[in-house]
Amino acid sequence: MYVGSGDPLYLRISDYYQPWYLESKNNLYIVRSLNKYSMNNFNLHILEYSDSENVIMCEQKWIDLIKSEYNTNPIAGSTKGYKHSPEAIEIMRVLATGRKHTDEVRDLMSKNRRGINNAFYNKKYTAETIDKFRIIASNRNYTSVKGLEV
View 1 (cartoon, rainbow, N blue to C red):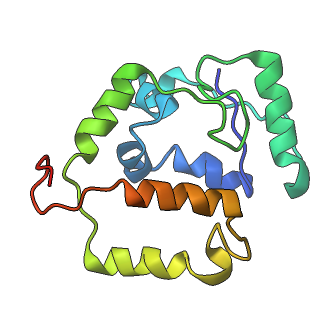
View 2: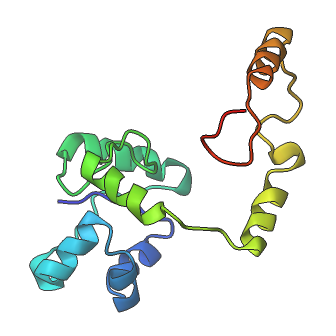
C-alpha cells in the first residue's frame, strides 16, 4: 500500500494514469512498481478527504498508521528523514562528476542568492571567526600547479 496526498486531488490521481508521468518519474518506487506490475494490479482507495491546510497532517497520520513499504520516506510532504543507500550515493557521485552548469544557469543561481535570498543576509561574522579566516588564509600556498609547494 502507498499513502499519498494531493491538492487538488484529481491532479494527483490523474498523474498516475499519464504515460509521460510514468516515464519521467521512474525513479519513484511506486512508479517503478506501477510500470513493472501494470495498473491493473493496483487499487486506488481514498482514505480521507481534507482541506488544503491539513492535507499533509492527514497524510502523515496514515503513513504512521499503515507503515507502507511504498512510502520510502517516513515524513509526509518532505524528503527529510530519508537516507540514501551507500550504493545510491556512489551512483549520484559518479553521475555528477564532470557535470558543469551553463553560464545562463550560473547567472540565475547567482541572482537567486543575492540580497534577502542569501543565507548570510543581515548577519555578521564574529571576531573569533574572522581570526580563524586570517589564520587559514596565512597558511595557504598559492601555486599555479596543483601539488607543487613553493
